[in-house]
Image 1 (cartoon, rainbow, N blue to C red):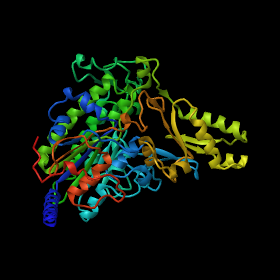
Image 2: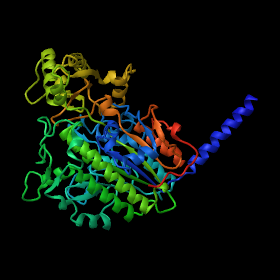
Image 3: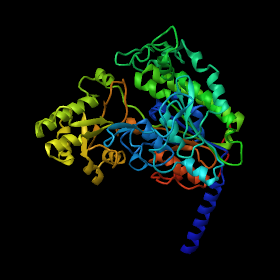
Image 4: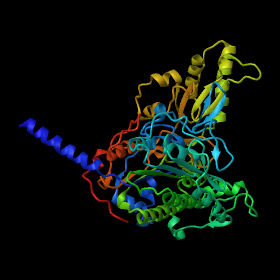
Length: 552
């Protein structure tokens, strides 16, 4: 009897999985909103229309408990996780940049001096530092490279890392143009040249960024123009913001910084995405194509004004409208029922420390600057082992919570790097704002005993990580920008994860989830191999017999 029941159950499971895998979308659209914590979907929901975020939440599987399981919540690591399902200690992208002790240079996560920028003057970019494969890579291999994978962002690292090793193209913005890398092609396609020549990017010069909602809608936000907000690129701290840069008479490079730090950067990106869908005929062949989109302007606005600002609410509302317009376009071109939509973010953001301190002078919050960490470490090592010769420093670099000790300094003092690192980890905890510190050997041998330690473990790279790795206390940030991110806490780690399409059962799911689960889940739906290093799981609770997703 038991054997018969087991066979019956297995048959039902196999039939269900077969039906799910038969649901092959013409186009998979993966959207990442740079610096968009999950809380924005809740806090700003009443201001959203029907066609953007609400469409996704009403028709998709909304994982309300989706968090990154690494500690360095930054753009590069986040985008590397989304379609690889693996974290930086495996995929190599553990931070936006790191220090190379051999060359004594800072390495950018998508730098590659063997290639060049195509469409502008600039350093080469590629996924050379990324280890493993992505969903797009596996899709290309499974289809005998007939599937097309196009990745687009305002930022180079977002476009490159979402696209993977075998993407047909990754495009990003440099000043007045969308560019790519010779890693993908030696010249821009005609449609990209036509877009760049259209004058669209320069047409925003002098345009005012006004509020999208009535003024009373912003009453629950912080004061407009708070003194701890940044006045970057001539935008000012108070609405309306004129997008011109530091020279209001003519276009300079500062204009392009101001442009991407406003909602107009997202508008331009969406226009380019539409051209890509048409020109590349995405979703119009007998294979599934993949389109990756990362909207970066939300991140620039969030850094400058903070998560409680009028500007961040306005950006969320304008992003909602941009998504609604993009979904309507896709519905007209391809039919949304033929597509799979995914929404997530690369990281969240913490409150501005000065905002918190203004509300309660006793709260523990503040800034820990990397140069202050370097100076503190230098004092500790000098006090312990003595000073080093002129031209030598104890600390080569403090970068993204990694401290790199000078090999020359320890040789002079006849001590080991491990000894110096041990002294620093013991002393670091006496520095204001430091929560945890580990030596490199500690990190490699670490059996995590807490969530924070688990997340730190996934962000430490055995080859490129520092001699000491640390985490800040909650509500402490590094850097001069108003708001920051990059720590292991929920405000930096908790992000949206919504999937809409055939084989996806709509609903809100509170089960533990992560953006690392996106690639395995899509792989299961497509019936292709999982990315090579995947750590994420298949979100099986949201999978069901094939059903037609509603049109817009």
